[in-house]
Amino acid sequence: GAGVSQSPSNKVTEKGKDVELRCDPISGHTALYWYRQSLGQGLEFLIYFQGNSAPDKSGLPSDRFSAERTGGSVSTLTIQRTQQEDSAVYLCASSSGLAGGPGELFFGEGSRLTVL
Amino acid sequence: AQSVTQLGSHVSVSEGALVLLRCNYSSSVPPYLFWYVQYPNQGLQLLLKYTSAATLVKGINGFEAEFKKSETSFHLTKPSAHMSDAAEYFCAVIANNDYKLSFGAGTTVTVRA
Image (cartoon, rainbow over all chains, first blue to last red; front, side, top):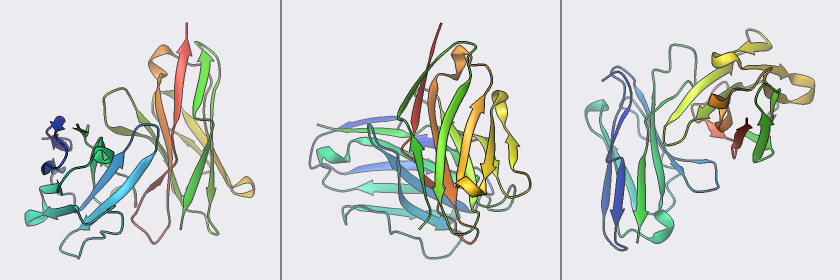
């Protein structure tokens, strides 16, 4: 597709369950980001992938969170043993890192996670 | 680390009135600065960006922002608000040699008829 695609758009789960959120970036974009947007707060950086380099995981809030990017394209964010405080919108973004200079991120519409 | 501060979490304007959203950054050197807009139930969309080419930056939908180094500010303006401008606006910053975009807390704009 032409834009960043995320699935599912909405996910309701029970506390303690694992969830997987998927991101399909814009074709050709080498950089991929995950951000978390909680109610009343700004965007919190979670993780960054760039090509084949080791990802920057410095924003992951706990070891229950992990992410991978297969083949330099699709990424999956996994949250294990979900807690209520994990409820948020998880936004994925990609960037070419070339056109327009650093930081021009293109965002998906997000995956809204609700943990009951 | 780079950071931005958005003054005012909510702004309410009348249709046709000036929209002014304030953003200040903390950086010892001029960074790259951005404004993003998020319409309800949508992802973020780039409004405009400053990359040192010009201090007055024009973006989409009639918005513009001026980079003022002396004030470490990058305020967003639109001369005449439209109902469709109701959204949340985020200021963001990235250092020249970095890749991590840091966002402000956001400002929600409501437009009164």
